[in-house]
Image (cartoon, rainbow, N blue to C red; front, side, top):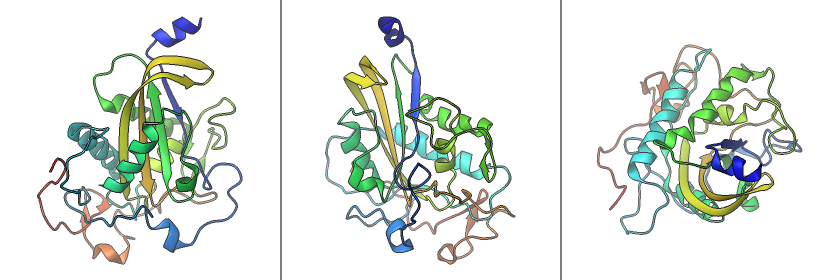
Length: 257
């Protein structure tokens, strides 16, 4: 039975945890904490990418996978229903990607590291078998919309991802959390990875970190209204595809410099 489970192309997910929409988060952090990645890097919006160091190094995600993940998030964010008045365009953040790389390299099927979960949101996905697109690990997060009714879950249980069974929706709400405007991901191949009581001989493990984190208890993921009618002042009234859009300083991509 265990061998059969491992041979199937199975996709398993877990929700964004920490002190937000998961059990025990009764106290919110100040805006000065939640509005920064707190990983030592500053960012600059450039076509949806943060400024990326020009030194070469090993990476846990390809440029194509990065673009697919980022574009898919913004597609989902632009088309939420009911429409969002304050949805911010999401950009790639290299410091978040590095923190995701470090965690993906551990091949631990759980959220972490604990010291960052106070500041970051996190979605995880793992599967066995071959896949044609990185989006096969991302789209199931969006599919949770079937069990979500704005502004609060209808059938899904936000406290039920790892220790009980039932529909989940907090992957989706983290994807469309209006103020979570930065994402960085990593994908890693893990051998003999322990997943829900079984050892997976070869698992593809995706980690996406978000900042500022979302899924705060008692809060809706975004404000309903005419698109871009409630954008933060920092966007200067700039709007694109139903999202508050950052001022573009350059079209130059720094990804593999």
